[in-house]
Amino acid sequence: MELKQAIKERRSIKQYEDTTVDDSVVKDSIELATYTPNHGMREPWRVVWVKKERLADFGQLFADIAFKNNEEKYQTHIETVKKLAGVLVIVGKRDRRQKENFEDLLAVGGFMQTLSLALFENGVGSCIKTQPPYLNPKMNDALNVQDDEIIYGVIYLTAQTEAPHKERKKENLITLF
Image (cartoon, rainbow, N blue to C red; front, side, top):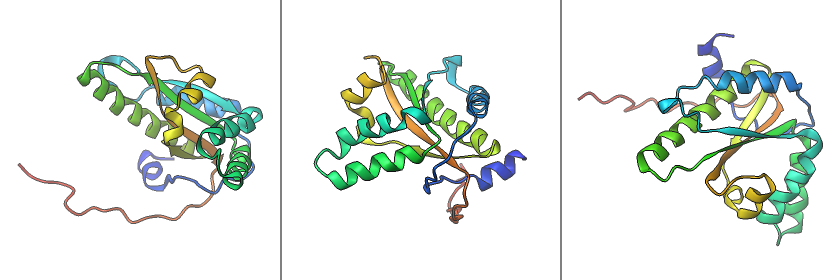
């Protein structure tokens, strides 16, 4: 698959089918994504891989934080997460220096997008999630996120199903100086 095709055709897949993915595909995709450009070669990310057999625990951890007062959403969330092939939690240092923190944030975003493209090229559907429960100390403790780190987001791994193409806003994209 050519890069141009991957960029145009990759979609966030939100139809979570009960599926699996080969470990080597995930490892290869993560390794490829580490070539994402980043300032000062700091590579400000690490990946916590929640494999299929631990998804129910991960779903319950999230539901305990997000849906503890809504039993229906609580159970639905756990059942939905159990269908995934896995979850990649993207964790990184939180630099107290403003410039470096901003650079790290941009680098992690690039890493997550590159990882999604690599997964797509390898036949794995994905969806990047950034939700408030990932900032909860209970989540951090369970995933061994250190005090100087933050969960930047997660990538759900699923089957690569069709997703609608949404027209891009290309107006006023370039301004001349």
